[in-house]
Each structure stands twice: as C-alpha cells, then as structure tokens.
Image 1: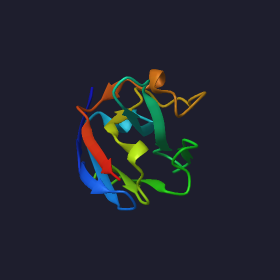
Image 2 (image 1 turned 90 degrees about the vertical axis):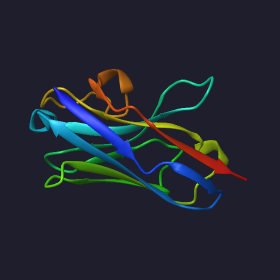
Image 3 (image 1 turned 180 degrees about the horizontal axis):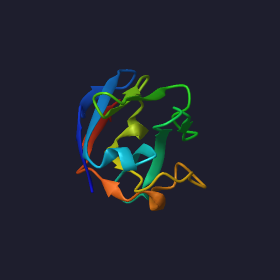
Length: 127
C-alpha cells in the first residue's frame, strides 16, 4: 500500500504561481511512476504531469506544457508540481497518484493506470 498526502493548493490571481507537494509513504519503492491529475466541476479527470521514479522521465498534458514542471525528491519521497503562469482554466481539484508496480505505462497521463490516490488539494485561479 502507498499513502499520498497533497499540500500547497490555494487561491491565486492569473499569472501567479503555486507549488504543490505530495508526500508518499508506505511501499512507495514498489511504485515506478507518480503523477498529478486534476478535475474541475463537470469535467473529466485530466492528466497534468507524470514522472518515472527510476529514470526521471516526465510527461505533460498539452494544456500545461511550458508552464508546469513536475519533479521528484526520492530521499523525501515527495513529488512536486511547480505551476507558473496560472490561468483561470487551471482551476480544479488536483490529485497526486502513484502506480502500483514497476511496469512501464502505456500512457503515463492516463488516470486509469494509477492505483493510489491522495485526497486532493484545491487550486483556484482568479482573473
């Protein structure tokens, strides 16, 4: 089992920045990939960014490329999401997730492939 706890959400004006953190505990060493996903009211869950724990490969959703950056501190077992140039359309509940296993994902941004989820942290961007 893997437990995930997110923090760092909040309210910010358009153009501002936030950094989300996700601390993992439990059998995190059995997980090859971690990711950030978001879901706005009335919309489907969307893959924001993901990272492979072993080699650091990263993937980003088209809507956040060039603005968001995912990183991983393997010593602290914490994954971060640095969000810059925030837009009102970035408003959503953001979730951290981890894969249960060491396999390579067919689509690292597919939420259906992740087994463990945090409780979420709200990000609100005002215009």
